[in-house]
Length: 346
Image (cartoon, rainbow, N blue to C red):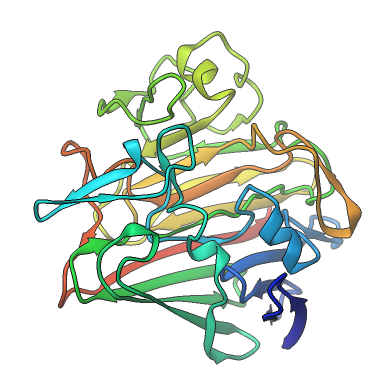
């Protein structure tokens, strides 16, 4: 189903697409930022809960920092000193996070109106043409994201991109989940498992990886078994203190390019479980440490750690870090990745 979601501050129309399945799930996507706006899931008692943080108007998505539910590109996460070098040419990007570039800057893919290529009750394909030099990156890029809702309760995101110059292709979705419902307060009591034995530590005050790939063993970073998000979030551990809680990239144990289980989250209150599959090498776990002072859907006040993110992507600053797999796309190549959020009741 397609409806009008209103207009941007500049007067552009924003379309909302609602996908439905036979199990009573619904997913809303808006054309502004190709944004996941809502995921409505029946809980263990059959009551429907919207497990995604979001807003009621286009202007709120434009005004409020946080990237709620948006597609991020050309590069997800941080680039140190807002610079990268391709084929001997150094490109200067916008400085919007200390001295770094975060999520490609203020004119990232989260700010633009995506065009509809296909749409029905089960899937929608949205496309965007990014011109050479946009955000400071080289090359004309054509990118698409396909959202599919299956009858098995899977929300599938398929990304695809091509370019006419070597450039960066590192897309993610910045959805904030709360499995008790977006209006239910802190998600710290919800449980999380991340299938990663290693993570990438960051520099204090910059959130840029040091280049080290460190073991999670014996640290609060270890989510190899189901653990409450808030159980160790205030521990006296340098990496936790550096970022005010969890905001770190995890090195997935199984990252061979095929679709693999990366993480799972569960709520004892709602009974809702979410399994996350991806073809990507890493997942950024962000516990919503700086959510707060925002008014979300239905006038709900969003507070600190009201939602958590599991952003599937290349590692932060991978464009500059030779120790990491690098996210460069050349002419004649096609970037493709898939992430799948699978919802069930346990």
